[in-house]
Length: 236
Length: 330
Image (cartoon, rainbow over the protein chains, first blue to last red):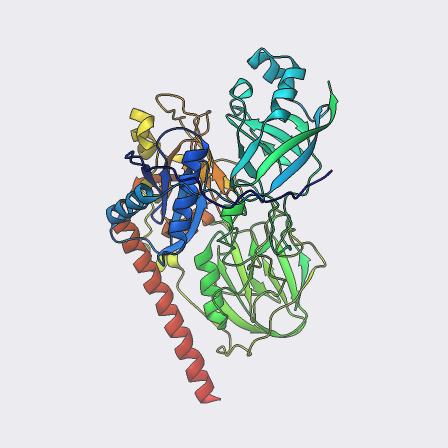
């Protein structure tokens, strides 16, 4: 099991021109505002989310920022008097947000594809019309970017999954999926960090410590990191 | 210092939680009824964020290995100190060896035991709250067990009247602000969320019908049972950050309200979000009880927060006056 730290990617900055598209902004309760980028689930959009996140970090009214997958949740310190003004400000910040790139490192994850943990590999083959070997090849040949962390401590949502192996989340979650399962949820992929209920589809297993609450930097992955899956073994 | 003599399975150390780490997937945790916790700490002169014991399974018994003072707030659990009944929402001085017992409450779900100096366990990521899902915080990330010795932090001895003193519970003092309907259902205020309108006419039904809190409910979230609601069309959402109070609707159509141990991100369509000022009442809602959601605005949320803040401030002032008067008499 190896985590290779290679040369960091060149820090900035590919500039993405502003688009006029307004973001969708909605509420979760009275203090949290969710901004969803219009358009595709892609890196340019995520780069603008990263930029927006940077821009909002300094605001004194902001308690917490949670970047998601081409979206961002802003939690204010207090319930605002004028929510419309907050929406306006967010829209303005979004319009101003230039795409920034984050300096990421490369994380190599050794995976045992197939085997006892790959409970959903047969279903993915049925869905995609591909053989198990092809599914595995397509998955490990991908170059993935950590778009955001969330859901469970240290869990990285990875972008870059080949559309041929997209697979919707399950209607009924698996009750006890093991930590380490390499999973696909819709157009996203990731490695389960906790054993428990999980609605994503498992195709393999990786022995990787993704989170240490006592470490100075508790999460192994950070937005912007590049992740490669290296097949350690394929058990089909 | 206290020793746990008897406990049910799901009691934990909690404080105000560890917000600020959702961006790395870490749940805030924290007391389900943060109001009760706050009042308990005020009665003892503790700092606002002092850690307490959240008791949600009863009976619960602890022995004071050292004297000091404690408060029991939240659900009325018929607390007894060495067999003598204490009023609810009460703080009192205690001597070495005395035993505090809490019994199953008849209404409400969770009681809070605050101790002078607060529960002293190591802070993890800025908080003493137990993260059961992450297995860290509190007592090594786990629930309390019989035989656990729990240390308390350094503190000036609390100055309390002989026999102790207490406050009028918020459900009584603020009953106009936190109403229940004729049938006894909690009325919970919420703001429509991102996918509200996708539910078409089912959205109206979401607000109109009573929802029952199912047995599959815990600190992570409450699953509600009732006539299912469905979006007009299926949506595959991109995962986004969520906060406690978010009301998500999984494919089966029965909503889930995320609570203190909420996931930090989600992808189910969300129909509404409970206002924060009503979350403590949700935290006291029992499995099997019913609630109805009322659409609210930011202005209403602020008004309710204000009423709550005034209640807390009033207690803070009274506690200060009581301790001043006692000090003057001493």
